Amino acid sequence: MTAPAQAAHTQALLAQVAEQLGHPVTGELAAALRRVPRHLFLPEALWVRDGQGGYRPIDRRTDPHEWMVAAYTDQSLVTQFGVAGG
Image (cartoon, rainbow, N blue to C red; front, side, top):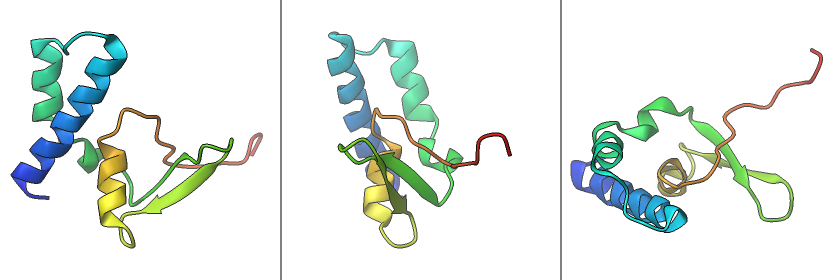
């Protein structure tokens, strides 16, 4: 990802977090979010809420734009499903 693209995704994330908080993100938190590239810590496949009580997959190889948007969105990302009691 290019530096300008990462900066744009990070700025969108900061705006989402500020909206949730009801005030701008503090300088230290904003600096940390700008400094650490979130997408480097995620696997190729993610699952996000589908709005109907379930999850939908997003694969970086087949939909890199949507995957990157998800990586920089203020939402929970599922990175793995497992079997309970396994």
